[in-house]
Length: 214
Image 1 (tube, rainbow, N blue to C red):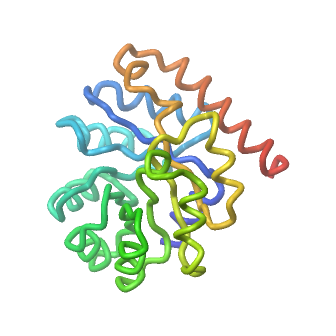
Image 2 (spheres, rainbow, N blue to C red):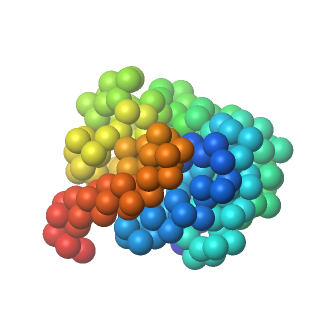
């Protein structure tokens, strides 16, 4: 967990990927790595997700690759078998969280209410996904619900874009932001990996500018 969190804190962006064809996995991973962001959350929304994750981690074993939209313990197990180093769920699913905790897998369940934050806290979690970030009220809402829980940190996802992700990073309780702006499914389907790499480079530069080049 410490290594995963350390790398997330360093990179500050988690590309959230929807991939329909596993053949796109390696060139997409290459675009992310060459763009300076060796990280991916492969969402389990498509039949190709597990194989795509397997190919990514096979080609780039040092890449911080995880699985998103994990809804069941069975999916969590499939994801980890495919090489996932962390698991993300859209909501707080006790069965998924418990499976991950029992198997030593970092898990970031989605929360958007104080009750869900307290459920995560009670399970021993200290970092959670804040979802859906923008539709539910954005950064002001996150700051409001985070206020009573000084021990908790967040990974906002949902409506995050190149235009607003840096503002989230300005909140000290944000570990990283998740988003798909640099890995548009349309670009991936079209095989436009140069565009992915360019957008990744642009986003990585924005992080460098924000952190003063650190």
